[in-house]
Image (cartoon, rainbow, N blue to C red; front, side, top):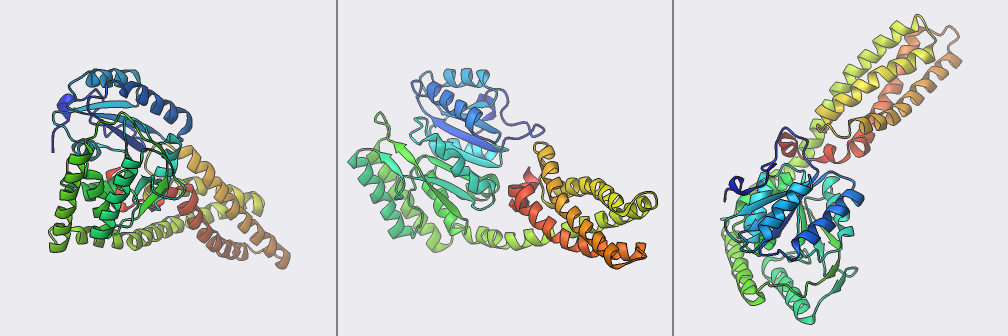
Length: 412
């Protein structure tokens, strides 16, 4: 792949020691000196004011011959979240391949420099990827709820092209060409080595391979206003796309594209991931319960049962949440630690309520208030609390990190 390090602004490639953004948005450009600055400023303002996750904008200059690179470097110097990369050769696919391969973000996206797509669709686009629901997400102008402003010629070409894909490659996604897509980084690492096209067919090839590999593709209806000043040569691009379709048909038919290997990995990933989390959660739970019971017995000698219970729970809940965060669910970023601890205390409140009720029940039935009976009751209550805790931690507290594949965690 083309080296990009010699022609990039400071901060590229990303420093693996620094906190990585959640989202990396690539804007491929070629001779776009008129549109680049206002579009990047508009996107930057949207990310700062309305996007709830850390994001980066990467301008990928495809060997422009006008003032595009000068503007890109100036924007990168002005805004900390903007990077600029210059490739010596043209090709949108080449630019996306190069930047995505080097990125450290959890989710990789791209959009056309004209920002034809309403930016309010950005969060719905990446949300299924962050939650673990989907592997790839695309904006679609061809779904019923999309709102599109463009001429009949482009509408006919777009619908005809997607009809060809449905008929020849049995695709199920509706819009292969919308310049508004995102993919999880771990999935991109699997697919990018198989993608051969360096130009406009890159999108289609990536989507077809993702679908054949059993990855889930989420489609988001978008509001789209066509760029009347688009300089894309529709005829030559259409012919190149058709050649790409034939190449993919041949490769998939004869098995020269190893999508089955990726499909096997994707299918085997989910159950193995859940079983690993259960085992690690159980190990953390055993350690926490032992520490909790020891602390409870020690404190019980100098305070009431309820006070000893809540004190022991508070102390062990902090360690339990921290260990499950990093080891069980793989949420290893420094951001969100305080939030996860606060959410963990909400889960702790449920555990405390169960154990407190158990002690109330014991004291109501056991006149002598035996310490042994208290401990047994607390163990039973903690078993129920543990099940609820796992569900809450995996589904709410650590969210997307809990469902992110193991191979992505190792790369974080």
